[in-house]
Figure (cartoon, rainbow, N blue to C red):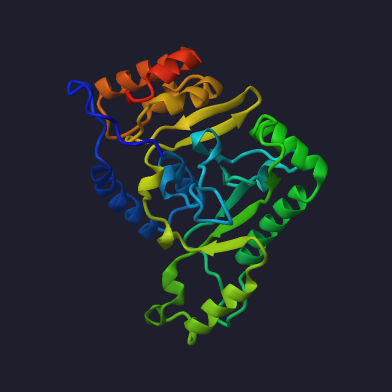
Amino acid sequence: MKTAIADHDPDRPQPPSWQEYVDWLTPRWDALLASDPAEPAVQSFLEQHPCLIPGAHGDVGPGGHHGPVLGGVFAEPPLQGLDKHRRPDFMWITRSTSLITPICIEIERPGKHWFTSGGVPTAQLTQALDQLTDWKVWFSESENQAIFRKQYIAGEHEDRQLLPQYVLIFGRQREFDRSYGRHERPDRLRKKRDFMRRENEFFMTFDSLRPDAQDSDLLTLRMSSNGPRVLAVPPTFTTGPSTQDDAKQLKSIEDALSRTPLITDARRAHIRKRWEHWRNEDDSAKIRELQLGE
């Protein structure tokens, strides 16, 4: 993660602190979940606030401590050959010394139940698990792995193994609390859910999604026919020398920045200026400014 912006220039327009952002974000996230929202509303909220999405820094799967490719999470990334209804809702691509780890994430409406009142997996759960299976089949084919490398990591790290992980975010934790009253033995169903999980799969409820300070600078990205672009910028985003390579590949940040909450127009203008600076900066200047932050 890039460090918080340096204090070299006290007149620089400042972002909100991480705590200010969390204090603003958490009640809105909780209120959204309490409203029993449709999936598109949840998708849109998470796109705007990627710090809620698990997987960026090694918390899912065997690696990822080098951070995500292009400093962000892909929203609804296309996997060639799968129709638009079979795309992951989100995908991080994390890196470690020996691995590239695509983390494909499926979200479902928070109000859906894992099990029927009789303790049988619901049809909605079965369908969601089938989505994960489709992605597993896709990544199992060497031709598709080659396509993925070319499209998402530009042929880099060819010596690193691809080891995809699959995350299902589904329902609410209350289903497994006795006080909720849906199941006589919710503890047994929690265990049953754990045994349903297959290799390289992770199951979560929406209640487990909380802001992660490690993700304060991470973007939301969209893969288009012209390459990746920025879809959303968090209010805590800062720039610095590590932004240079990402900015050159992601191009304009303008549209995404216009939707960022909690920042002033002056702060937007500052980020825009610095983003363009890093897009146009050469490597020698990057070295000179390594210690200067934004």
